[in-house]
Length: 212
Image (cartoon, rainbow, N blue to C red; front, side, top):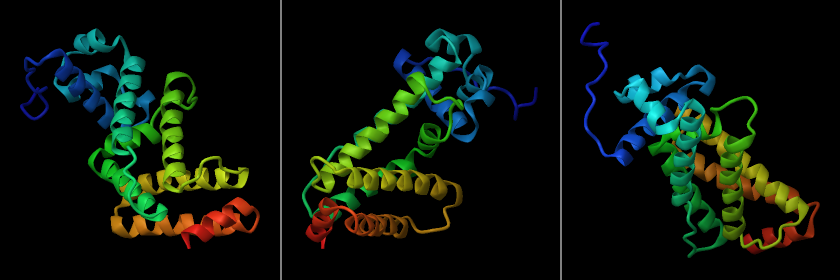
């Protein structure tokens, strides 16, 4: 084994710090590859830990995967705590900025949360991802001053959230558009979606008039 390929020496760390390092290494790997293609040995090597230590803390790859996703989800939701203070669209733009702050600073966690994982996204993994999306939906509702959305509004808001997720993944992959430009486009996309919904739904029409 050459110095270049040798595993980094292990350091004495607290239990919490070691768990954080293992989860961070796992998120980097799960964000770049499908979970099925990542082994415990891969995680141990990336974290400079032993295979036995990973099993000691997490029990197995599925437990590690779930813990890593929960960590990423918790960090994202902490960024999205409501910070009202402007017009609905201003609040929406502010929340979007905090969302993309997380995307930029925690790229691997964001990618693992939305793109990685088994084909059958049920059980704990599905609950984590769905929980993040429900949190986003409630946040957008609050920012747009919508208490009980009509079916048309609900579909519009959820469609926009899906667009934001896709835009985040695309931006991480290519980074060929300015982030501020992308955020403005997404806010304008919300207005455009409301315009379409307004042709079919009086609640959407009233909401669009309020934001106009």
